[in-house]
Image (cartoon, helix red, strand yellow):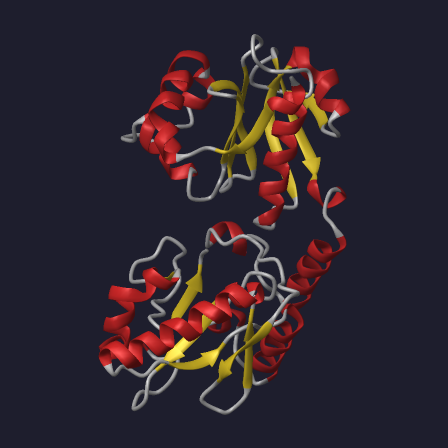
Amino acid sequence: MENAIRVRPARSSEVATLAKLVKSRLPDMMSQVRRGDSVETHLADLIPDQALIVATHGTRLAGLGALDLDHQRILACYLDPEVATPDTPRRLFNELERRALQFGIRKLHGVARRRVAGFMRSLGYDSRPDPDDEDNILISRDLMELADDDTREILRMCDELGVPEDYGVAHRMPLVPQAHELTFAASDIFEREQRLIPEAADAFKRMRDAAMTTASVEIRLVSGYRAIAYQANLFRRKLDQGHTMKEILEVSAPPGFSEHHSGRAVDITSRGVKPLEQAFAQTKAYEWLLENARIFGFRESYPRHNRHNMAWEPWHWYFTR
């Protein structure tokens, strides 16, 4: 049966069912709901960040785990003893830890019942008595023990540059794996070769050609894939020029967090407009993209008032397929 247990991010369509479970079985999680919010709203807020994890066996729920990213803690863990297997809680914790690490969280905290202290230690958690409740223990784990070499290097690099440790959480931006299989997508406005992953390169070419043939709209490439090391050097140059980290982060994601590492992101402009400026939003090219980019698998990553608290970037589009 263990192989039949699937651990995955919860879906929006499951929020109502999971809210009923929380109300009936997880009073501790209920206490974390913001005043004025419903449980449904609280759970729905976790979905975009994949901070709500479920373990399922077919259509049955075997377990649930949730992260409070802002406070770097495990918000809840629930198991159905009739469905869960002995390894289900370990797999739930592994997934919660992996997701927390993706946001750059170095240490994860939580509260657990005293009776599971031995199990928590077996998972690698330190524990101490909860001064507010003798039935509970306070748990914590250093997630850097779990990090692979690439993640360690990215976080070391960000520390060296002076990127705030909570950048990923504050902007709800997880680390972006660096693409390895890349192909020529197009020459940019400076006649430099720009690369993307093959699927994104093909989709960009089709989108560019469709814009010209169907609407006489010119889409010009400014930037495609950028390596993590390139992004780090970009930050170093700006720091050397006297820019503050706050100023740099207003216009650029730090190394490891940029969608350009994925080989799926493009910066786009059109003739007659300065690249990487919000004036692009006044062009026919932007209007065409709003209507048609989704057909080719692209979405605008940072629209007005986006959830990442990033400045509006009408020129930045991401291939999602």
